[in-house]
Image 1 (cartoon, one colour):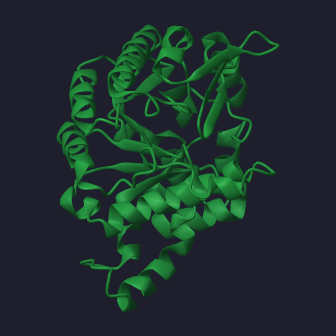
Image 2 (tube, rainbow, N blue to C red):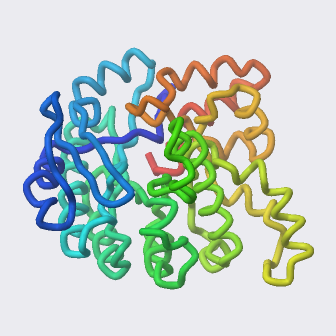
Length: 326
């Protein structure tokens, strides 16, 4: 069967070149490290652009070794939200154009998620509408918050409306995580901050009414939904006793409004998630090529012997194929 990894990241070389040439003029500190790799820094965020993220030959070798047929490409940190709106749009357009080009070159191996300048929602809507006409792009990559603003703010509703209209899923991924100032040591900003931030994003979309205002909107949560699935019982209790929460149904009844990737790094936790939300809501994911990713994600699913063959097939590729309209 077609094994589809729905959570992978990629930078076009031209996109990195644009960051290097124009980033400083738009507020970023740009340099090169001892390996001659482009470095990027803005307040609260720094990044090194490594060849694993740009070189397709490295990627294809890793895919073969992992027995994965297709990667769904998306942007990752630093994305485009740090930039002034006009430059953010320029970065998003370049990413989407180049992503479409490589997907068109390797249609059996790659698929893409579009970038959008969410710091200017009106521009984001325009770019999503444009990107939807490009071959090979099938959804939108979005951070779990936009420059510190939660995703339930009304300013983002036109973006959700456009995605719902297009039938495009939104893939949510942490960026500048909550509480980062207390998680500088031990890589806690990633180990804990990423799943916490995903939980906040999911809760905001539920409590803020986004999932009710847009009943056909599809949202994918990275890292197996982070803290959201494990804490939804606490949210149910809070919704029952706290007057500031107004919902037509308990939060737990929204768990199947989301899709979740398989990145748990623990078989029992992944099984718990599958039992909680259903095998038809879980997508294979690796976070390739991040060091916090899963090198052989399909193996994780294959060794879950309590799943039926049909359930494994859905997770390994069937759900992604349905969601991304392959």
